[in-house]
Length: 366
Image 1 (tube, rainbow, N blue to C red):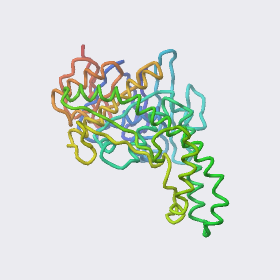
Image 2: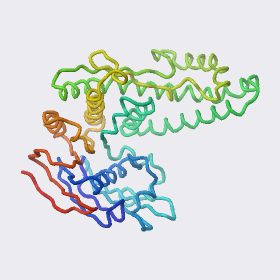
Image 3: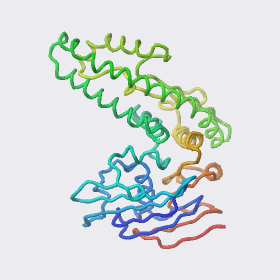
Image 4: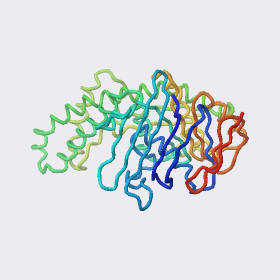
């Protein structure tokens, strides 16, 4: 799987850009705020249907323009693919796959697999459980399209149950009305929990291998799935969770939200048997986060039959020379996009020098 070319019209700070890419390594170099990250943001958007910056669609339209357009041409294992996105100040965005409009983002997710990493991804390790759930959900949604819809249904049921908890004034009335939401919540929770637990089981060996490689064998990584249902196994899961929901109903009623379920899942991450979120160094946290992202390369390859696209935003500024070399060797198996402010000793791929929303120079490395 590889991006062949990208066209941008009025996207961020680009007025009009057409760029062809190397099949393996693409280095986007330039000073800060020149437009390097905007290019990989456009690639990510065409794969996932949203920005990794979490910004609104209209914010990606160039200042003082009414519309913005992205076109990305790709080559997959068995076919070519074209993704087009049109943003407008006055109407909803339009997304096309091979010239055909799609109506739900779920139709796009999984068509092109992508992995994104930046120094901000440290939040995967050191911030709230939301970030670790998002990590699992983005990966599973790309590799298992049904999971994306399953998660959406769970979140709608959860929202309805929480609304009922907040609106109902009498707990006896609540007991008579909440059962319909509990049954649906339990049904979806079992499937989500099972897939997340299996995902961590599958990705762990790859993450351990990547982590050992980057740390030069000095550290051992371990990850444990921490269920928000507080159920340790999946035997009779529905019955156990239903019982827990009933036991916690008075507590949920007082708080006004559901305290048990996959929306409370987390991951416990250890390096050399030390919990890394609170006790690991920033270097260890960074290596863990990067290792998890690199592990996704192999899990996606094993499921989809081809490697995903890898986007590394300003990662090299955080690594020493030895780890840079090791990282470059590790990612050589897939098409990779790297943004940086200073050139490292790259001996392959293409180097694009970017200045003020334009490509100033392209250098081919042999």
